[in-house]
Length: 309
Image (cartoon, rainbow, N blue to C red; front, side):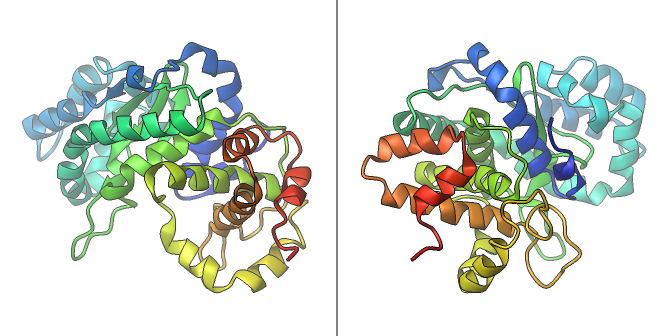
């Protein structure tokens, strides 16, 4: 991995994003090219809740270790190092805020009902990008410290990060966008990019995943801070272009001390550049190929025409 900056963010998406970016090129040949052949695993989720019910209120770290982690899917085992760590650690985290886990229970169990929609999205992505590959996807319940990662067997998504907002409770991400998060990360898995750590390059990496997710699903999970971006576009562009070719991600990506605006406006800025490129292209199919195979981010930006009108 050429950068560790993304792991400083409090939310999970960029750590997953960069892991996908830097591992995808070597891993893609292992995976299905037929979207119907991708396997979406949710079997670990009911196992977690069975053990939760059997051992509450104190819970039992040994039971979680032996009956959940040790017997779990390949994806769950891939989520243990540096994330769940152990049954004992998982129980410690749950007991710090048992109410949180109880509130996301229904949402986590509902994920299995979303598979048909995900397969429709996979098929839609295949139509716009015939070279797409489809790794297996594992939904697991972890220790609230990461929403996902990649491993040799595919993608892992932390289901405990998704829930339904109610009075007094706001999950990290709404369960209604879980499919869009999966598609966003699936698109990252396809990216075949030049090694470039600049603000422009990383913004395009994120923004292109949002843009193509929007083409496939009709939206993406980051809409709230896009509203802010669209309302302040000129000022933000004036600021962005001053550092876009440097590796200083500043307040644009993943973490910021500036609480006056969203932390992830680099996603929005990258989206604007990618959308400008796509809208300008006469051949939309080739434009998608170009967006996923950028070898020179400066040249891609110049070809988009964004900010030059």
